Length: 259
Figure 1 (cartoon, one colour):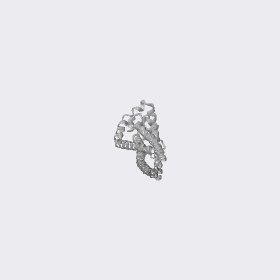
Figure 2: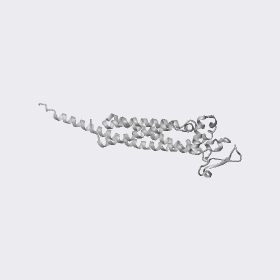
Figure 3: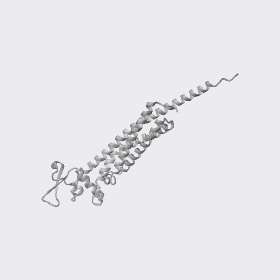
Figure 4: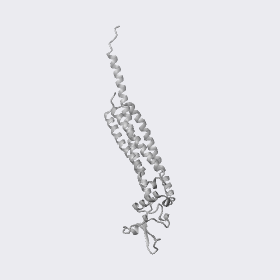
């Protein structure tokens, strides 16, 4: 078997090792999204694209890891057929990854508008769905917010999770006063921030991480495909030269026939 460039072989192996780690990162992002703590909020009610994001991350993560292992084997063994098939399938994954990422970025504003519209109808779940109620209370306490759109979403039944602590710093700036329905002679301090901004910020941060990982992955994929193709071409070229040289040597070593 003809040997290709040692530098290209090492470069191809290193790039594929990087792809393995990035594929594992994408796989972990998908797993984290699928087990997100506020799943009833961003998974089951309005975050309809959450399932697709999980499948996208896990699917491309596994495919990248598998193809990278094949690429490492092909480069190490300098196997022409394996390198050729690797280049084809990695190119297809590169095109699919780039296409789906761009489509996701273009539809992100529409997704945000859909989420905002869904928020308006979600407060009704607070009284009917225990999981939703527990998660929203937890979110309001941890993120110091009240209501998905406005604290008035709860009408006269604002939950205790909206209350600012008595020793809360900057209470006048970060809390708002409302009439205490249980005691008209006192005022009640609740968080002024709304939870929809917190949720959308979390979703956007997750998407930014995914986009960054996707474009980094796509860049390395393209570089790896180019190196693998050049390596495949180099091996084929050396194989052809070796074949011609072998035939010529064999012909010259044949004894001349007696005339």
